Length: 252
Image (cartoon, rainbow, N blue to C red; front, side, top):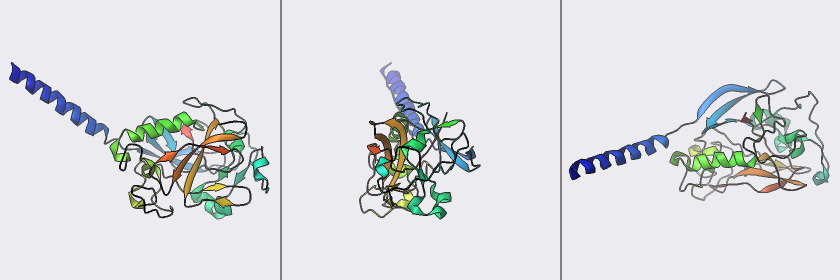
């Protein structure tokens, strides 16, 4: 009897181990030309966990009502409280590959802040897609952290799995995004280090990929999602709403 019980326990243990390894082998599913914006631009999408994300940065130049998103350039950019878009590295030739940069007012397109998951904030995203809340970015991070093939040296080290395989400034830090870049992008999310727009210039290109959430952090600030060349982890601090950041949309 004891021998049978031991064999049964061993069998269950092996089944649990096999199931865990199988779960750790989940791979992203890529959908070609799954998204079409107002301008007719198409984007691939990728399923990661229970979410489907755009696999490149938004580059639409119009709101859903057909009005053009303006380009507002002022030295006192922090006083801009209306929607605006900007070119990556101040170069329109880089838009096709890198997308556009938008201030928060443009990204939400008049919608209010949301901390829900899903956010319910369409913003400037195409029909059937929405601007993610901080909770939706956290869901992505937690999913990646629970699957070892997306982690490098620890469950919080998921930045490399989201980052593109080129374009990052070199980092000598172990497991950092800028170290051994060919090992990046296990999720096919393809985050590009476009940097951000601050008043009269684009800053941090090669160092950071920065994305808006639809969630406010105060009257003049909102939360952002950041991948850094020099680190293996991601962060979600607040940022001044007038700064131009990249936008990724999530399927409704």
